[in-house]
Image (cartoon, rainbow, N blue to C red; front, side):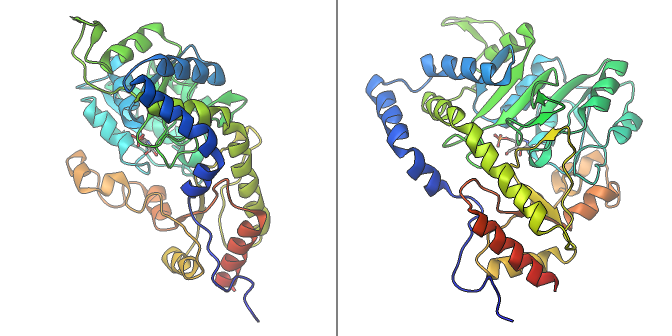
Length: 373
Ligand SMILES: Cc1ncc(COP(=O)(O)O)c(C=O)c1O
C-alpha cells in the first residue's frame, strides 16, 4: 500500500518565518520607531504592555521582566521565600522551575505527577512539612494543574502558591486564567512560547501591591528613583523593543490560541483509536497547547520515523530534573518518581503550531498510524 505521507513534504515544529511574514508590516515600524526615539530601556512601551497584559488577564499587576526564570526568582524573593524554606514542585518541568527555587535560596522538594503530566495534589499533600513555604505547580504543555485541591491545600497549611505559568498564557481552568490562581503567576515570553518575544522575556502577575512593588525594585537595582537604592536588586528588566513586540502579539493572540486548539482537537480525532495516549481534556480545561505531547511505546523509533517523513518533533523533557547532575545534592535517585520517569521515556511533542493546516495534521496522523500498523 502506498503511504499517504510519502514524498518531500515537511511539517515544521515551529515556524518563525511564517510569523514574521504575517506581522512584518506592523512589526518593522515599531522597531524603527524605537530606534528613532532612542528608547531601548524603560519608557512608555513597558508601562503600556504591563497595563494591557493586566487587562487581558484581569489581574491587578503585571510586571514586565527579562525572562520567565527571573519572574519565578523575583516572585519568590518578593514573597520572602529563601534559605530554610521548602518549595514543592514537579521534577518533569524545564529546569528553570527548580533552578529558580535554588536561585531564591530555598530547597526544591519534588513530587510525582498525574497521567496528564501535571503535579499530583495528593503527592503534594504528603510532602508538606513544617519547612514548606510554597507550592509551585507547573502548567506543563499549556494545561493548568489541578488548582482546586492545590489551592485548598495551600490555604490549609498557610502556603504560598507560585504558578509556573511559563507555558500557559491564556489557558483557563474552571473559567479562570492561568497565572491568576497563585500569589504570583510567572510567564515566559521566550520565542518558543505562544505569546513570544524576539528574545528572552517574561511577565509576573500578582494582585498583591507589595509584591508587585518589590519585584519592580528587584528588577532595576532596587532603585526607587534615579539616585535612591531601597533594596539590593539586579537587572531583570524587559527591553523596550521586546515590549513593543509583545504588545503587538498580545493583540493578535486570540486566534493563535484558537488555531493551536483546533490542531490539537484534530489530533484527538485522527489518533483516537491508536496506541497513542493523549491526555484527555476535562471540560473545565481550556488548554492552549504550548506543546501537544503524546505518550507512546517505542518513542525514539516513532520520532525517527517522523523525522524520516519530514515531520518535526521534540521531547519536553527527556531527563527529569531529579536525575540531572546538578540535582545530585538533593538526594533523589532513579525510581524516586515512577510516573515522571515512565513518561520521560514515552513523551513526544508533535507539531501543533498555528501555521499548520488541517492537511498537515492529517499527514502527521497518517504517518503515526502507519508506524503502529
Ligand atoms: C515550565 C517552564 N518554566 C520556566 C521557564 C523559563 O522561562 P524563560 O526561558 O523565559 O526564562 C520555561 C521556559 O523556557 C518553562 O517552559
